[in-house]
Length: 448
Image (cartoon, rainbow, N blue to C red):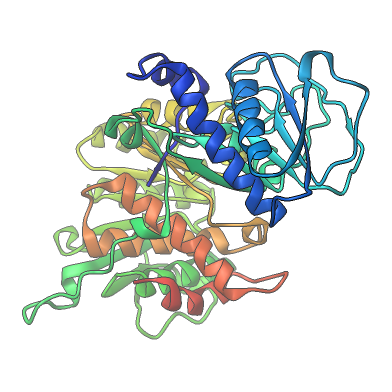
């Protein structure tokens, strides 16, 4: 995982650095100069314009300029606070005006060659380092961004991904600790654990999942969740759903009708909500599921039922004795918290997880997973194609399958794994559009 730290925390790390600021600036300048040569694919005769601010960000840009000059590049440096209206033509513009600590509006000058690439130092100037929102603008869109020591939220959220281009993290000797990575980190391919192979004594009940889903006319959601659970680690899936849900169930699934009469000790996890409905009968079914005391994934209709008196009473009885995973999009988040997440989505997810005493997966681009202890995992593997009917039901199934296979330990990482694999499956499908069932086959290819 790649640590993600706020601008405020980055300032603390900077101030605690054991080496002089001048040394760190030279290292940062070296990293920027290397990236500049890579972006230009050469040095000699190339023209570079550096827009340098008054702080350390500008000092990084000036250090890069000195190195580039020594390597045969023609470099001109312009002050960001008193720049000309239009910068001269160049083969590359280095944006070293302001870093992640900027909190006031900023509008950069025009570039003489609008088609020339931009290399941003730390973050494109004018982006909020915490939220990725635009401060003033327009922000120069970078082909590449070199940031230092750790990622910052503004690179990942809001306009950050579109404005930053390819982002690389340069190590300049700042002490980003293990605690920083544990507190908040970007999930990567290398963080996904392979499904356990089992032993000669392993059987299907070692990773069994219960799914409470579906209602008249809404059986597809239940079917997608069950199929995804089976492809993501569950060895057995039992589905509690009425026949009137009206769909063909996966042949591997054991389906039985309400009421919910099961031996809870045989299951590792319960998922509840996809296609469940929001009426009194649905609330009673959800309350029954939660009363089993199993680790439970609540999604879709189930999230809107959590405020129902019968469901809320069971949740209060559960307390923190059995973990819950809640997977809202922004509208469902508002129903749970009486407010939208706001521009600082990390803070929003953390607050919800603490208040609800659950792992909260806040869907979006990117997805934020937070637990009640305040730890956060950010997942950026998905894309806008996942905003289509049924993909959330597949995600519920993937979370359920991972929990069935591994149990509730390291739950925040299991949920982040599921979200990451969900996004990777979408990438494996390819094309400009997908439907939820496309993800089911792709999960086989991306799940280790």
